[in-house]
Each structure stands twice: as structure tokens, then as C-alpha cells.
Amino acid sequence: METVSIRNPGMYWDIAANIHFPPDFSAQRRYPAVVSNHPIGSCKEQTSGNVYGAALARAGFVVIVPDASFQGGSGGEPRWIEDPEQRVKDYRDVIDYTQSLPYIDPDRIGILGICGGGGYSIKATIIDKRIKALVSITGVNFGRLMREGFSNFDPVEALEGMATQRTAENGGAEERINVFLPTSVEDGKAAGIADIDVLEATDYYRNRCPAEGSGTRMLVSHAAPAIAWDAFAFSETLLTQPMMVVFGDKPGGFGAYRDGMEIYGRAASKKKELVVVEGWSHYDLYDNPTPTGIALNRIIPFLKQHLGETAVSHLTAAAE
Image 1 (spheres, one colour):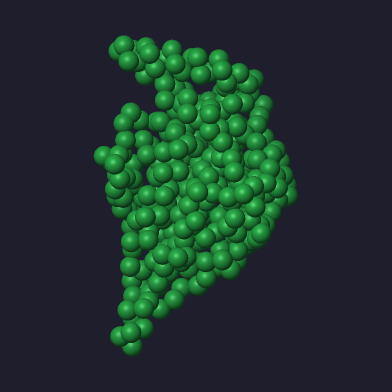
Image 2 (tube, rainbow, N blue to C red):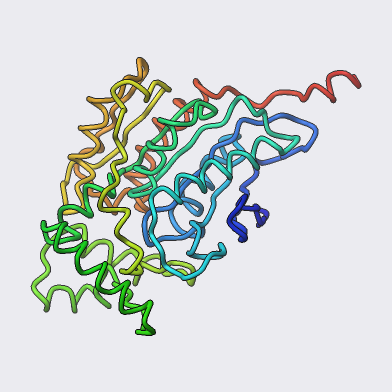
């Protein structure tokens, strides 16, 4: 694995990314690539990298796993901004970088995203036809979630609060950062939280896979754009690439089951597959070997079908 810094054009900061290489990697060959994108509040060292990135690399792909701008190892100030449009721009900048690598076939790049990263990957695929295949794993339309559960189903009031907070910070007040999760599962239950997604997210981020770059938080004064954003807009006409949608059949408050069914139905893709992993939840698909194994047994053949296998590079073939 190699950690790289990718220039974010016009933004004055770099995107940090890990590159996972296949076994017996050779820079003299041309590989299909997958950009693997982490959930909201996560980082490249967690499920997008250590589970899906690592598995896809073992299967023969070069996998680039970025941190979002303002988060993890990537630059950008202030910290902990969650801006959907910036996240989609990050992905496109990472694709620019990926296409520049001599060992990557620039016409065989796919994208994979988990949770909010799945929704962002869907939007990136809608607008960027360099992406030849899409995999959404327990994907969530973050705009829809912000308008609903994350704003207590009152998005206008939430926008008013964000405006007030931004005005206060411009006047010198301290930043207000919302932490998405309780400090422990026990504290969450004691506070009356019963939702499977919140409790299992807490277990994942606090116990199963803590990581320094994982924030699980959001700067309130810069959150307004997410409320007016929609990951699925124009999918009926513009989302045409091969697509696989993966989620568990245990629904939770973040809405991956609902969003997965919606985008599968709406997408214009002629080649699309729905994978419902029966008996498992949103966060089981982050790191539990059984459901992630079920998912990968479908994802890997899908990506190989649509991105192809490793090939001898043109330069190597000419030399031979």
C-alpha cells in the first residue's frame, strides 16, 4: 500500500489517499482501477480501505481510497465540513489522478462507495462518464437524510439555526460541531436511543474499528448545502452505467434499504443488479466477514465483467 497526496485543483489543499495494489503488482502492466469511498464521518483506514479496498486489490484491481476534503488526512479548513458537492468534486479529482498513473487503464475505472459515500458515488457516476461501473454498498442519500432525521424532520428550522450559527462565528463565536454518535453504546441506550443504525454505528466507530482520522462529526455552520442536495436527481435519464446496489434487509434510521430500492428503481442503467443481504444490517456490511463476504462474492465478478482484467501495457507489448 502507498499513501499519496493528490492536488485538489483550485482549492489550495491536497487530498490524502491510500493506493492498494494487487498481489505481484507490476508497473509494466495496465490495471483496472476502483475508487473506494468512505462513509460520512469515516476515513480511508476504515471499511472503504481495510475491508473493500483490500479485498478488491487481492482480486486484481488497483484501488484508490481517498479521505474527504476537510477530514482525515486530507487538507482544507475549517475542519469537519460535510459538503456533498465538494465530496463529488473530490472523487472526480481522484479520477483525474488515477487516469494519470501509467499502470492504470484510463478507460477502465469504477467507483464504489459505502453509506453516504455510496450516495456521493451515485451522484459522481451520474455526471462523470469516465466512471464505467458503480457499486453502492448500503448507500444513503445524505441530502434526504439531512432533510429528515438529521434535522428532526424540520429542515427549514435547521437552516435557520445554521444561518444563526454562521453569523455568530463570523462575529468571533466558537465553532459548533455536532457529533453524530454517543460516546458508547451504553450511553446511547441510557439516553433512550433504540435505532439499530445509531447503536451499531457507535459500536463500529467506538469499539470495532476506531481510527484517528474518523471524525463522526460535522461543522454546523457549513452544513446548509447538504439540506438542499439530492444524490439521485436526474438518475432516470443520466445514470446509465452498469450499477450494483448492495444493502442488508434489516432497515434502520439512516435509510439505506429505502434509498437502495429507490435508486435501483430510478436508474436508467440497462445493466443493474440488486443485492439484498438477508439477515444483516447496515453496519454488518462494514466489517462482518459473513455479510461482507456475500457482498464481495457479487461485487468482484460484477466489476471484473464491466472493467475487465489486468492487461499487458502498450509499452511492454511493444518492447516484446
